Image (cartoon, rainbow, N blue to C red; front, side, top):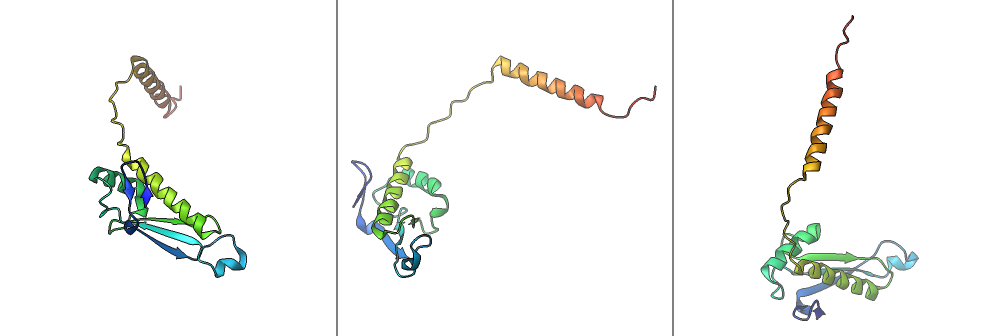
Length: 139
């Protein structure tokens, strides 16, 4: 069981781990040992998460979200399979934690008088520069 918060915990049956051969450091050992981990969390069918949390998680996950609604996290940072497994689980917990907090609503603001004046002044200066371009009078 992977505990996210006091109220949310992901059961073991919702997670599947697959160990694959890793790229990177390890020498000849890298050809023999499957140290990289691929953690798959069936997020769309998970009873642990509420619907709005799932939609935020989908947006945060990006291309790690599969078509069938699973979240796939890969980790091959270290040469240790156990350490990679822990890192992948931590990343999943971090992602879910960030999806739990709803985004702050944007408060519409108006431009200040000073910023309006600066913008109009810059436009006028730019217009004058462009007006000076063009054919030169022979006189």
